[in-house]
Image (cartoon, rainbow, N blue to C red; front, top):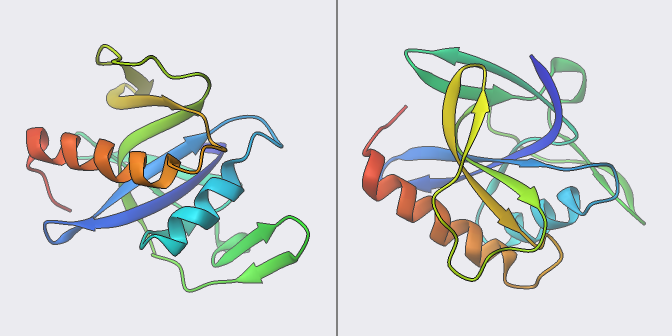
Length: 144
């Protein structure tokens, strides 16, 4: 399944843990991804993500035609060294977050994946991604 989203990943306990960033065009997905890349995340896919399941886990990668490419508004399309794939450990959707949210999950290809709602344009959003991934990793203890 191909979705309109971005996929970045951070190294946690020896594995790349992916964040699938969803939202409509112009919502700030690529801008958040660009800021997260500066904070140590790696690009897996920009704009379109090919998703599949294996062993009860969700994985994603860029379609071959756009692998390693990222659209940077005001600059153009830039080439980056992408990860070939990442396990999707967290889904992020744009919105106004609750102060202390109840646990939420996105149902993707029949799997329940932790979900966070964030203001994508907030300067703290990349740090929030790191904290959300760390919280999930502590509970899941899974590796790819």
